[in-house]
View: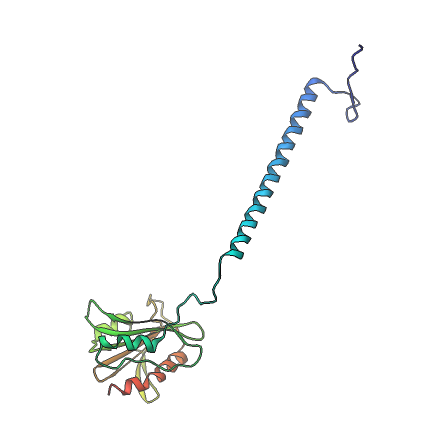
Length: 213
């Protein structure tokens, strides 16, 4: 039987040499492996996206805000046993909420205080402290040892102002603060809210302040 003549390759116009045949097969093999790798990556990506979609659909979601909304009045009623003076529970407009309410005791000054952390409608923070028989050191520590910058009268109550909004010092949350005293109780407000928001909270505290006089 006669041998079939070598196949003429159109691009070359002649039969391939053994070396060219080997090179062509190697290149075809390389391209095949490359396409297979890309397809495997695509399949893996699709599988991952499908898994994420299943998790999103299956895992239950809640409309409950991440930040807790504390019932200050109920918490104050329970905490009242720790303090002799009535605890302040400001009646604030809609949009205000509390994310903490508790009795705190300073290990340095041994001052017991009623604390409520408020978030304003603009999501700024104001911490309210009501300290029993407090001293100047306790107040200074709360306000990052900053100096008073003036006074302001809000709803008939005179407050000392600590305005650190323009300060380059690290004052933590004490960007702005108000303090006042009534009887043996010291009230401190501090946080990142605007003076107008501080005034809203201070005015809501007037009944509690007057109850101490």
